[in-house]
Length: 83
Image (cartoon, rainbow, N blue to C red; front, side, top):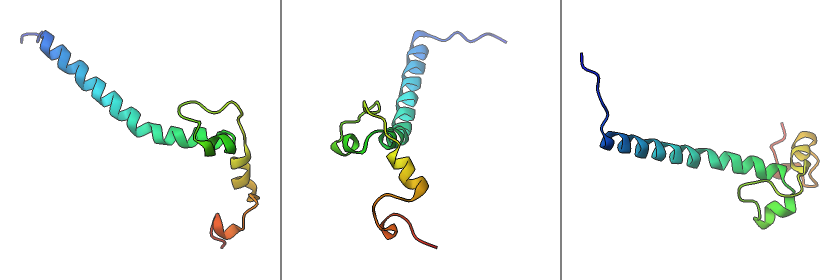
């Protein structure tokens, strides 16, 4: 059997395909990453929309503590269904 030698065109197409797949993977993963960085950032910075790619300067645990201890200052019917 002969060994297949990839031509320059084959290599360019492979690079293009890998680049498109990497871009698609980034587009699929970014929304989940955005949710995580918005929950660990301070709520006022998150509400202003100042967080794009990195967490804000002040990292806050209030969102996680609110969910853990169910003490958000809002009536429970707005946050979760009581059993």
